[in-house]
Image 1 (cartoon, helix red, strand yellow):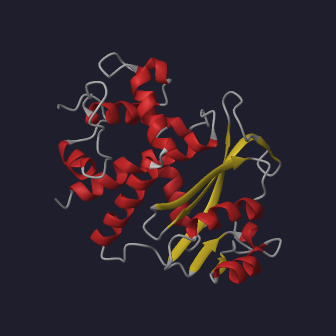
Image 2: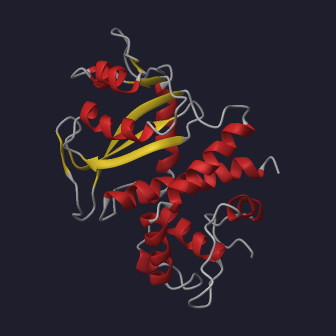
Length: 260
């Protein structure tokens, strides 16, 4: 299959990804080319277009959306993403799972209603928050999308629950907002991890590169390349989380392709 759009997977990226996909059903309608369908989903993710606005050289939009929805429901996107994270870490000479994580959130406006949205008084935005935890390579290991009305120290609890599955974790870096309401003590008591806040120097003016925290900010910059994240266009928070996993797939497959 030739590459038609910048968002399409290259042959090398497809060889990395194809082995991680679930086995197709043996019964039912004739199967479409999976690479064709995934390229369509990546097109929506990268350009931010509506599902119904997919170009006609992709499969019918209902077929593409159904694959996205079913894989979101069954946790396939998350499983693919975690498998790629482990491969990238091993390629970089690291253990498959991280011992250090960096935590942060991003407030974003919602487009048209949807569930779980609210007003973030700090950023003065009505919408949702994307809470992510990344490793030292900037790879996403946990993501939770929730209403903007949740304070950072409260919304962090949802992300920390997801991080429990990775047994090597020892230290989490975050900004000063996560030091409120006794969150570091709660993390130590319930998970045995150290939550270390990285504070901005008091006398600093303008932009300051803060240790560790710049890594998660870079990850947010990677996600910003995908116009689907310019606002939260998803009706459900589960779809918002799935779109973040999908945004990271081309980044990781591109890294792995270089080593083939």
